[in-house]
Length: 384
Image (tube, rainbow, N blue to C red; front, side):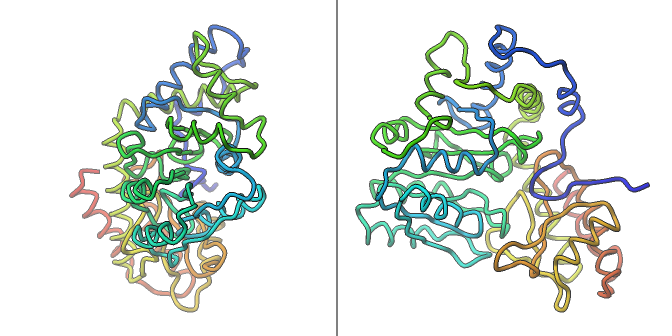
């Protein structure tokens, strides 16, 4: 018998209370009973996004609402800037190409955060650019970007900012309204602590105005349709059939998050990330993103001579723990340990202890317990 664990940066573990909600009988979505649930969910989403603006809900994964942002915010032939720190940041450029949008790439070295000064230079050199796409948390490299400063730089250049916060929201502090973020999106299988299948978009009035002049086609992902249903009826609603059971689950998850408090959620993630990094470094491994490390996951450089895919496979097949490997140009070179969502200090101890054993299995004889001890010291100091 082998217990199974998820320690990847998505999908993430799901609380038992949230899992139980999926077993409730299905209900019709055009009823006062479901609309009351959706209203409570919407209020929870506003809390989570740190905004008073409407938050649209789509039956989709995160990439779907990335596409929705391009469809709703751009016109064919328009020139935009993509500020990227890795594989998922680069996805913005790929999506733009599908819609006939000219995307200039401002790419940080993988393992480094986006430099706001580089973005400033790019925007100064291309004053016709009025839209910048970027990422809060780059899952492929374990980097968190400074969205507050990037938003300021973009606005000073007279442009709008669109932020992929799929894996970052709920882990990294992100004050959507206070920082003036124009458009931000996220997905359910990350910090929301529910299965994949829901995605969310919050558009500030500035972004809504941009959608009115954008010419690219959209139907299901129309922000106009979604916002009308959210705001014009007595109770918030969706223009098309919602993912009923998932919405019931996310309502419960948001209740748990509200009970903990967003500031405490951020603090917990920061402490767990710090403990993970301490454990990894005590073992003798190097962090891939030491200067701007993510609170959602830790990216680690594989020991010389060991393919990171083998580390990933040994975690999964020998110990029943799913972590994540490297992607694109860092495939085989790094592995990624998630500490996102429904995670506490015990999970970190398990992950670091297993890492020590995995390395032993693969021929790197690290002293057993050194990583665990370093992680424990941080967890005690952080009261986790």
